[in-house]
Image (cartoon, rainbow, N blue to C red; front, side, top):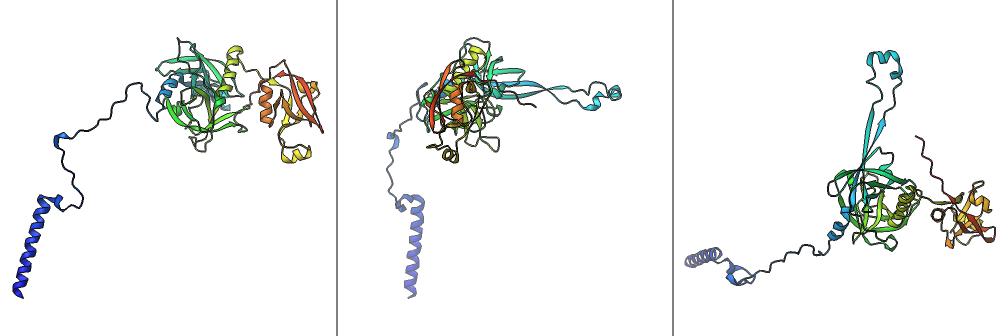
Length: 388
């Protein structure tokens, strides 16, 4: 028995020694995976070819960006601000000891935004709130040049303004079509967020025709989730081909930064306002002198209406266009020039599009009768500035 145990232990020792040698010198013999033979110097590798300059890359909007960004500018504005004078400064004794150096010294407040070059001869489109009350407006072009700009005119009700710089031929943006936009279309927002410099963000059209947001008097916004932040106002919203489809105007935010809900003025509206400002220095809109009210389901039932479309005339300005035409409070405005009135905001837009001095046909319902009333359109008065 002792001899058998000695033979077993010697055999185990030899096996372990052999296993150690194999694992050290030929470990592949112990592997369960098949070993591919070496190809030596005959092995070749396929190199990824370089993309030629100017070639279109898949999943890239570089061409659209290159087309649009030279037309987008940074806008820097400043204005003089005077702090209220303290009553003690009017005391002769106080002034005798401290002099006039403690008087109300003017300070300069600055702000920033963006703009879009819309013509080679120097016209720039931006938001009215970017340049309102500015004493000095400076424009930074994409090539690094800084130019002083003057304000041609602005339209606070649509929050649009037109500037002009004196320079040579400038790279004007190509206008696209906001009417052909669809929810889900790719869009790029270009501007100067937080003053960091020209920046491009991407997203899609989230919704169209947004209104009743309380941002402007006339609202028909494109909603997008492309990141828009403070400083982007007045910048370009372009399509995947680099064509202008909107002017970035506002964001919905609780933090001051982008939350994926941004609003842009459609280029069709912006172009109409821009052309009027360049031609006349202001935006001219139609006006009939009425105050309207939304039709709720309860009011629709009370007025025996089929649905809530339309607008109830809540008030008529004495001697205004509507009053002269015979429109009365309680009338329901159903249509303007063969276009259906859907709600008060839509009615305001339809009336504003009318040319002052022309005669417009209004479809109204009075009691159970529908009638057509002709109104000589007036010119919409300019909004009165809010008292500080």
